[in-house]
Length: 578
Image 1: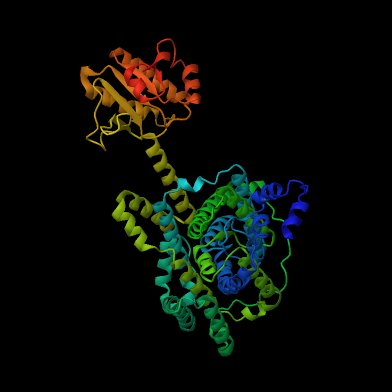
Image 2: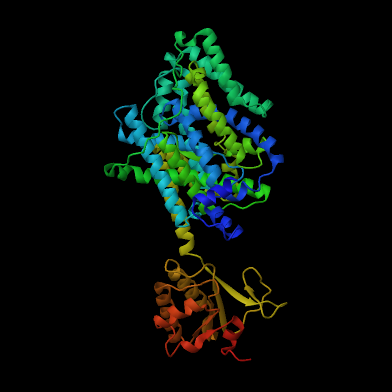
């Protein structure tokens, strides 16, 4: 069994049995799922693998063009990413291959270097993809799988929408047989409009026909692999009518055979450009891949390990960089096709990888006559799924301010470029998080009339009973240095509204597991200010780590040690005993 071989290869003794295998499966998930593989799944996985191959081959050739790499780079990607993710990933359905978003990010980053030739461009791209993989692995080992939770969905949707517009505009010249313009999306669109009179009619007809077939099949016969159909038709028509002699640009020769394995080279002088780009690439890839993986895991009732996903994506990207492939990510459309075709496990991408190997070895000459306008049509069709107008309008109805933030990110991509647009999205998301954390607000609690031992927000439960002379305050978020001043201000405001009847403030710290020094200092200031008014500060639900810091910072000196209580009831009474 492969699982037994992997256990032996890692030097783990046979003694321990299932527990040892479980330890290996934590880092190499195939050790866990392969021994449990059922023969009854094989037929479905083979069919799904064939279906996936039919989708991926045209997409990878198209995305290679989008990334500024030769067509074979897309095919080589499949030999690495599909296999490596099947071994190390935790999703049964996620397909890790080249994506439109990652391809355009690679293009945007590498063009900054102004490489002198194709070989230099490919070397820089491999270095960027390898660096992205390394950052993924480091983040996974540090258990940073939560990082995408800091990106708000409206901001991410705005970025992806802007990216789709950027890609579509960049591909329109290929559809029309024109030279691509320079500058941002608006500049390129202006260049296109000015030069429409120079468009190649034959190229435009081929590109428009490809778009018509792709969108038509998607609407009328979604089960037919439109990408593969357009690929075959484009090659056939091009060869029969010798379209290259009529001014239609074609892909040309694609090398046959296995890729040469080359170690990516990273130069220190390039890191100042590559590291920000790699971080952005990692963030976009992980946001999309994790969202897709969780969607299908929830649907089929299994769990995703986000930290292991980082490691798997990192290894997949490093593997792709060694064969000069594309950056690998998890696409919703590719994964949906895989799941819709009946895939039961990661065996289906393995079958697709086997078919891709056959393609690389023997079938690449078939792509010689493929029109580049057909590739552009495949790209535009692929990114059209990212233009979710309905989703953005839904954000406007639910939360207009978040809609405008998403729209600002979209505009940043269109006006300033992909990487600046991504920076805008990340900065806006972080500012949103910090703004909300720094001003969490406080809840004023009262006694529940039905359950006297329970205390609820008076704002949400107007029938709750306030405790005469006692103000019960609960921060709406854990107390830490960034929001301590805001919580103090909220308490000061509530105290001022109580007048002279107040004799005690009960602060419920149940949500605060550990107190930092800055927060303790603010509480000390609050205690001193309340004492000047003749009001006691009493702390309820103080956890042990919080209690330790409170003692060390002087918050619980001889005046405050007796003002710590296990619950709100005891704090109201001012004593622990009944």
